[in-house]
Image (cartoon, rainbow, N blue to C red):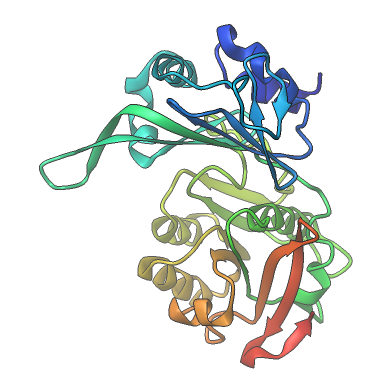
Length: 313
């Protein structure tokens, strides 16, 4: 059994781990494991949905053999994820996700508890989980690399895609190649703000994914604050961030550009209209890479330059 399979199995407590052996064996195609109290356990593999049976088998048919997760089993899994100390993971629970070894992220949903200031204080009665499987694919950015370099200079690049189309995987490999150096440019000092611990797959502050030899990682930090922290303290040549969108993110990006940093970022969306609506148009970025699905697989569909000119299609 490979390391990645063990990482998936270790998400679950011993008493129910055996039911996920077949699911974990599909590691190369496994994208998500979805758990819901009172609902069937589901696994998304290669873009197709499977149900997990009480024997741990995968089936496309939702029938009487399917495993329906109980609230007690959900509690067991959550306690195991928190190393039986929810208090120590209160901040993660408040943000709605837990990160586990390997960079896999467990999204959680339940009853939200608000403080007097109206902000989320905690969450209880966790009844839904989405285990998103992190995939490190060296070479994922090979097609994009020559399109975002010009005479040895890295162009400010924004990667746009709907959820589940590989933008974080693409970003991770871009960081690695830019940091290590490639045929397109010498290696650069890269600063990464990894707000949700997905890029580096950090666990207890240590990245588990290869981000290159010249990369500094700021883990679990808000993007708007982290960008300027790195600029002030680590002198990056390139800043990389995932899922930008808020006004604060845009202001921090503009400040980083004024400091002479290159920029690689991602956002949810499908068109240039989505980009423009967030104020992230050609005044900020020089290349716009659109990802999507082709024949059921994540793919680079289109790259535009400033003014909307097609660079690749």
